[in-house]
Image (tube, rainbow, N blue to C red; front, top):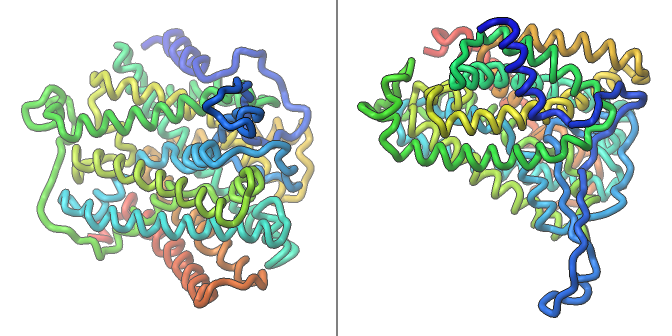
Amino acid sequence: MSPTSTFLFLTVLGALSSPTDSFRVPSAPYVPSPIRFTVPQQTSQAIPASLSRRPVQFALQADAFAPADASAAAAPAPTTTTGLPTSTFNLIKACVGAGVLSLPAGVAAFSSSPAALVPASALMVTLGGLSAYSFNTIGKLSQHTNATSLSTIWESTVSPSAWPVSLACFLTPLGAALSYSIILGDATTSLAAAAGFSLARPYAILGLAGTALYRLCRLSDLSALAPVSIVGVMGILATTVFQGVRAFGPAYKAGGAFFSQLSSPPSFAPGVTFLSPQTLVLVSMAATAYLSHFNAPDFKRGLTDSTPGRFKKLTALGFGATSIISLLMMSFGFLTFGSSTLGVVLNNYAPSDLGAVVCRLLMAISIVGSYPFVFGGMKRGYFDLVKKEMTPARDRTFTRVALACITGLALALKDAGFVCSFNGAVCGSAIIYIFPSLMFLRSGMEGRRGEAGFNKFMIALGALFGVAGGAVSVMQSFFPAILG
């Protein structure tokens, strides 16, 4: 593929995810917030008058890794609120992202048997329940302290210095941006192959970073990217359906239409070694799949009639639906490829598989459109951590240096599954298990009987998952012989 053709291909892909307005250099820090579209609702005899006079609002969260909490100042309270159905949709979108594509590899890390999906599913549901509990705890703490962000809750309960939260606000989106760059390199290469081009992975990563990603990360107004949230939801749903069809169809079985195109054919073997260190890989990936806790104060303040009971219901619905989607994608991907599952399951499917091509395209557009939100969260986390004002000159310098470093790491690391696992172990465990429980214990809130002891258990569990999960993730990817 010639350099000119490579440039044109990457430019077209970037344009699909870029706003049509001209690119502008930011003159002030941008704090992302839910983007709302207000649609007038006509009155109808079938609708109560109290409801017919109120507009219908659709709020789209851009990405779970773009927390407003990463800004130095607390985000302002929402001027409008959303009902339970819309808030539930937003919470699901904030949780479910490209990280779910790594879950099948989490099962493959400790077993080659389809029977492993039984304990793996039980583990995912349990971890989803613990994540929902801590999310609800942050919401209660937000109301108890009248704080508007995770960092201000920390300052009100634990310490005047919120550097641990600021550090997490920087490292979490950094890991997300790195995994996004790796996935984009793989997806773009596969899409080029499907189009009849030969595009090397380094050229794909460098081309996208130097064209679409850099310009998007320098935008001052990200509202034009709101439709990409819909593309992201479509991508997840389409990928789930596609995986189900392929898991129970003949296409990837011996003699199937795409079996001969696989570099590593599906591999299954009896025996489940669930109680092994490799299980922590799935635990770490689950932390990434359920991570939306930065946004809990915003969901609490943005929910209409936000009583403790309604917020608990929102949490149950959002995390329940997230668990179902995660279980389906994990199961379908593993049932198709078994122990041959790669770090991002879409990479397993044949380049000529039209269904896989559509899913890759949707996910690529979604990731390119979400990238500036992720990068913005990392940027604000950094300036909050170093206690410096984000001037236009510093913003420009940081964007260039950070994007160059991320791109360099993406060229060196080829497994986005490892990045998701390690990021989930180190940062996800702190945000989901340690921070909320520590703030609860220091807040003076009266909980249910035994709740203080349970939160102490959550802190210990988070420390175990963080240290052991991070170590196992590294060994599984780089020193597998140590694990056996």
